[in-house]
Amino acid sequence: MEIISSQYLISNPDFSQCPKPDRPEYAFIGRSNVGKSSLINMITNNKSLAKTSSAPGKTQLINHFEITSSPSPLHKAEKGGGKGVRWYIVDLPGYGYAKISQSSRRRWEQMIENYIRKRENLVCLFVLIDNRHEPQAIDIEFINQLGKWGVPFVLVFTKSDKNKPAATTRNVDSFLSVLAQTWEQPPPYFVTSAFNKAGRELLLDYIEKLNKGFNRL
Image (cartoon, rainbow, N blue to C red; front, side, top):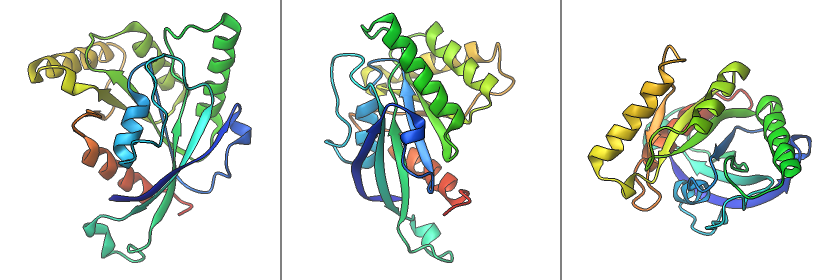
């Protein structure tokens, strides 16, 4: 799959104000400063799409981006496969150590929970994990909560370029080992780098497969 176009569409404080749920949607979330905006820009090959910042907590709303993609050569041969496919990427506020008030934090949490649990066209949630660190309790707790809610998700380990390959493997294995304490099977996962675009093609292939199964295309 290749990205034909990507553009910012709208930001909202509540899922009920989001665009009409008429196309597949993929939301990205993670601990503050996990590299979420950089990853979105890498996936779409658009450096100016999602606003990046060194200050945690920059994203405070539900941000929608409209994406148009062309099918991979394999899928072009299928019926209707030559048409561009439109879908959404959503940039959600991060969780973690952002310096915000308790009331603002609770408002963010409620906004995120309502979106994740009630947005009917949300196909998959991409949970970003900073690959530079050992497993963090806040990530594990969030993932376990997704399990209780029954929300489909995958893991995306970011910033792999910041580690030596052995450290990347060690940290991924360690994280999956901790998850194995509460999960019978680990979720799908990807190892990525916004710097050298590692994992980009695998992510796009995964999204393309999910797009094919969306019943409103």
